[in-house]
Amino acid sequence: MEVVRKLASIQTVNTIEPIPNADAIERVRVLGWWVVAKKGEHRPGDKIVYCEIDSLLPERAEFEFLRPSSFKPEVRDGDTLVRAAGFRIRTVKLRGQVSQGICFPLAILPPGAPTDEGADVTELLGVAKWEPPLPVGMGGKVKGGFPGFLSKTDETRVQVLEPVLERNRGKTFFVTEKLDGTSFTAFLRADEFGICSRNLHMDEADETNVLARVAKKLELEAKLRAIRDRHGFSPAVQGEIIGPGIQKNKYGLDAPDLRVFNLLDLDAGRLVDYAPALAILADVGLQTVPQLGPMVLDHTIDELVQFSIGSSVLNPRTPREGIVLRPPVEERDPDVGGRLSFKVINPQFLLKFDE
Ligand code: ATP
Ligand code: MN
Image (spheres, rainbow, N blue to C red):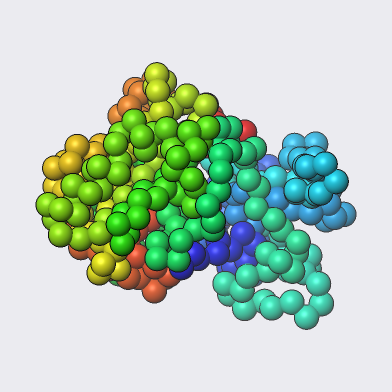
């Protein structure tokens, strides 16, 4: 089950703090985010409309002030409108303070809109998700939609998960580096081998697709069969494909490669827990995303964001996109709306690369 990200929602201003050496602006805390705003515009306890980074706000009078800094023209494919024009909310830095998202008074809402805390007003306001231009090399023959027996890969941002941090304080989590590539799944089910992009079941035989080329190069079918034969279950692996032609090849690889972050037992319909998954992947010679080790969760959101800042293990000259935290034993979490797992995106990475 995919959980829809609330791009625009009703929130309460938690706190407001001054920014050193800035007299016209201050920082406002909403959820686990810091937003820079004009001084005096908001007060603690105010209910506001909060729009997260990656929001694309529609061309409306209230948002016109964003035009000089944030306008994105419409995208068309022939006669079809792929994405309407709008104003894109991105991570910025003002007077040394990282600002993520934007706050508006409730007055921007149409009459009758919900104003209860947490209410999702994304559609009501016509807010869309900003998606970067499509990755190249993702063509190739499609076999169908994303198979129903698999779940799509996704991670929730820690900034909306304060209750999850509270509930899991003192628990050990395993940290991996979040890689910036493209999501990939390979499965072996009822003796059928298949591969998927983030959203589609692709033809594993069509090597115009980089995913099919990686599957072949890594002999993924043979490796999945080895998992089944040696470990006794029908597996799927999910990971990130990185390399030339993908997300600007930030890690400077010579050829596309796969780094695995999930191992699924399709017979049991569950994810394999952390340690056994690592052992099984190593056993068949599959590389994982960089392992940054265990940590006992006793951190605020701000501390985790600090911790996410650093270089990539794969290329020390490039900032890492972020980190992903998972427990040793898979569990469901009501606030995450799926497995307990979340991401902390490195703000330096967003400032540098989020075009
Ligand atoms: P958002 O949901 O925040 O709008 P998004 O859905 O585009 O963004 P990403 O920011 O790409 O998601 O983050 C989730 C993706 O991160 C996963 O789908 C997976 O492909 C990828 N990923 C990369 N490295 C890891 C890792 N170490 N652990 C888990 N997932 C990872
Ligand atoms: Mn997502």
